[in-house]
Length: 100
Image (cartoon, rainbow, N blue to C red; front, side):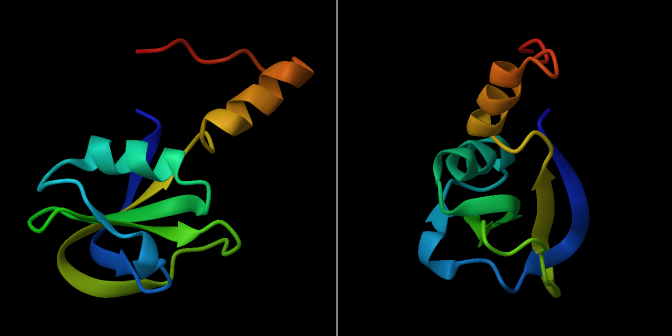
């Protein structure tokens, strides 16, 4: 997995509501894939497991400002998305992790 749970029963109050998408309830992987494709998104995202709302913190904000919310979970993306992997590979600093 390329994302890690940061907090349960929390959401990011500084997440950009304009990029909220409904990925379906309990679809954390689908939310993660959406956030990776959305260039304006940073490394933090939250998902409402019951209502399916997926939202991200904008890339220009470095942290998730956590606030209480039942049925929401905050995640952080570990690898920084496909474009970050490409940059690292181009510099030959790290080997790319094998696909699972």
